[in-house]
Length: 182
Length: 189
Image 1 (cartoon, rainbow over the protein chains, first blue to last red):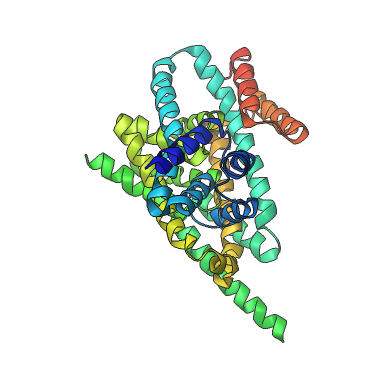
Image 2: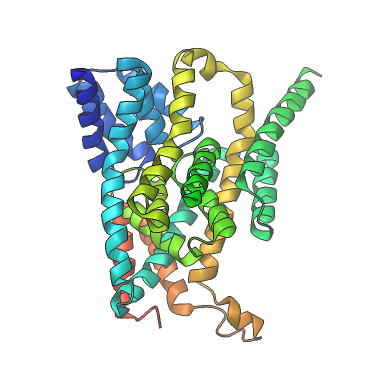
């Protein structure tokens, strides 16, 4: 019981200071989990991130679940994840309720019009970063362009793209391997 | 009541199929907007900004935001829990045989296709934000090419992109800068 409480508090604290998500969380986890609490080795954390990135869901949540599972099994994984997302829920709920009241003020509207431009650039930058690790050859470039074109032109659910592109990855790789043998 | 059920189902699907972290949830949020009309594309761009400027994972923050504006506190609890539930289930299963998973050929090969697709999906989401922030679609429909581009906004976008490449600071700095520019130059007008 004490361990569960400690898991919750530790992950709650990390949820409060983790700006940006994804790999931005790595140094915070290394300090809290590896150095302070000694709950896991550095190598394990790197593994958790690697696998957390290639499993569905938010990377930071996946890593929290891993560490919680390692300490206290399934209950531990649930508690640590709830700890990590609790600050987000509180902070966003407060901001969202305030924003609705301020939304008719002219300065607020002007600020958000500027901010939307910034979001546009931030996401463009994210696309460039993800593209660097994902687009390695002409096949992957083709997949990216096809998905982009269809997603812009239609309202097809992203789920369809995820399933088809995963299958395409497996098929292309197995055909390529056949070429290598020849 | 039925709204809460839809929230749960949509965010469970988002958690289950968004691969590659934070930005990967954005295409799903567009999809939810199309299907339900709970919020506009403009609302969504604002939410992304708030989620990037507050602590916590971006995907979690965005699902909390959507849940809150749709159904208040209960809504944000349900949407966020639904988002992380697939993670908890999948990771608990994988944690038992972590090494096998890492070395699996099928997993690696699937990712060969998934990563570029994720890039394309997020690129399409970016294009939707371009449409509401940098250009003026209505002007094009009326045949007015000159006011099709929003010049002030495009200049700001180029400046921010150069700043990001040069300084690589946390997004919250650029968001604050853009907000100030928006107020000074009357961007909403």
